[in-house]
Figure (cartoon, rainbow, N blue to C red):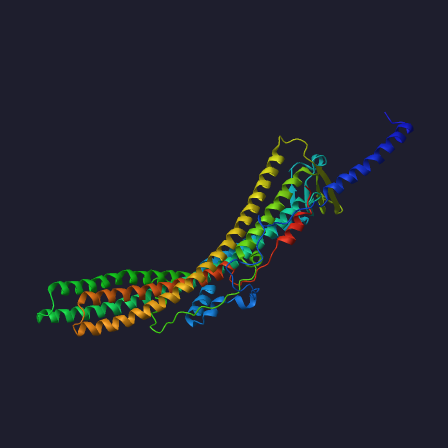
Length: 493
């Protein structure tokens, strides 16, 4: 039944009232909520508690922080590792994967365009009179297919921006891999130098001990020493010889670790011992402020990018509640021949606009939102914990470095005094003024002082390496949180 003019006049105002409502729904879908940027769980202090120099770090000068030791061998090893290490190569591949994922998500923002073509031919084989009702046909068809999901709620945009945040985290991971590799090369280098130095000390003292045992044996033959003195001197020499295999084993395993870090065969020797090696002198290292760690440490930059990525995925999950609009179109041209009659080429088109909005899904979307919100909170908590751990590592490194410097100075004086006492004890023992037991005690004290001093020098160098690593190593990094958080704010709550 046709509607009356009066009914049409009554329905028109109702339709006019629905238009503002639809516009309000569309505007609500595109509203930008306020998203709080990530912040540490506790306020950071203005300076480090154990820092003596809080000057801001110079990223350009600190990028090659290992050059500050002035060791050409160490510099060459680190530069080689940066170009050949497998972990760095793996991290670079992760960046390639993440960027490809971001490109894939970006493609969803644009229409997908495809080409279709078909050719068909049918021949019934029937007589000509019959073919009038069942003709032979040849059809050539070609067209362009367009499909597009119009991102009304911003979910596709949020997924794309989350992928970009993943790419930023992967890029920071490359800087983190470089920092780990350079610090580990420096660490293993100093461990190897220490093992070679201690091996040199033990071999020298063992040789001196054997000479002492030979003198005692000569005096034993002359009746001026006892068999007990001779056995005691030989035992001390044997005890020193027993330390040699452990030091050689440490030097050998450190060589293989360095070879792997350099991308070399573990069977190849990296470098030989250098009797002229001198431990680097202590120097000041500018630490900057604790807040600078948020931008300088690659692990914190990567963790913050992951916070932004999970927040954006939370926005993507919330966008599932909002309407979706799909546009599809197929336009083209076809050429048809029926029996012996060629029809003029015809253009065809098929355009459709589809609307979809969830009404009831038994809580599936809400569950997905809760899961993703929990992941976002987890990422934020992980970043906040990483910030505290980063500050702790710097504070611990500064404390160890300061105390080890004091210990090293005291051990150096101790070793100097004991070396002098050994010279006097050897002179007195040759003159018969002290017995062998006293000389052996002095020799053991010198050995202990030399080895302890060498260990202290190693710990001092390792403390410097750890401090550079805790400060971020000088690698330039970016802070993607501000940009990524603003992107997350562009999607509906």
